[in-house]
Image (cartoon, rainbow, N blue to C red):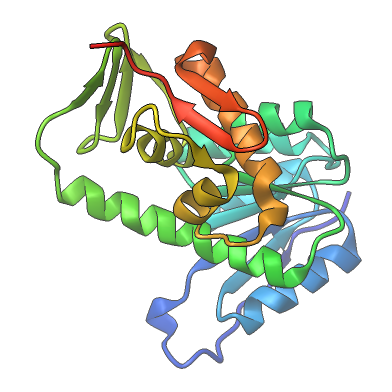
Amino acid sequence: MEQTHTSHNGTTANPGAQRRVLVVEDDPTIVDAIAARLRAEGFLVQTAGDGPAAVDTAEAWQPDLLILDIMLPGFDGLEVCRRVQAQRPVPVLMLTARDDETDMLVGLGVGADDYMTKPFSMRELAARVHVLLRRVERAALAATTPRSGILRLGELEIDHAQRRVRVRSEDVHLTPTEFDLLVCLANTPRAVLSREQLLAEVWDWADASGTRTVDSHIKALRRKIGAERIRTVHGVGYALETPTP
């Protein structure tokens, strides 16, 4: 079993601003490349090469973000995600060697926020990490700056202040990304938003190559709030359906 490798980058000018990223990957070439790129971006990085080491390191080190491969020795990345999220909420970027939508939906279902399919560019990976961390910061700010009232669209309720969603008065657990995606659609109910618009608004990502990420999150969101609430406009994008006045 591969041992956990630990490394800190102490060269950044403002150490107080450094964020911690735990990279969980059993391929030494990939993990070294990811770690090197993130350190160059100013992050503190630790790595783990198997499921048990990942959970132990996350508990001891309290990272700000996980980059997590699905296929791991010991137990897989989905189980790592479940156990880490049970300890404390942390944004997770899943990696997979298979372009399998089922894997992605399961990953999103256990608490992952985004995913990338190998092979990927290190530039895109670094950009996704920055986006996820900015989303966490925005969510924290929103929690301390409550917006008045609760948005009600028929049986769907969105509480911006508490970042909670209810359907027919029952709480629905959404990941931070799913919540932001729902709010984006709810801001202009019945209006069709393109995949590119959603990608730019929710992920701060302007590259159209990420539109399948939008599709997978929409599918996960439909499973939680009801498929009939999100309409697909083929070749364009999605719209949030609301009751006719």
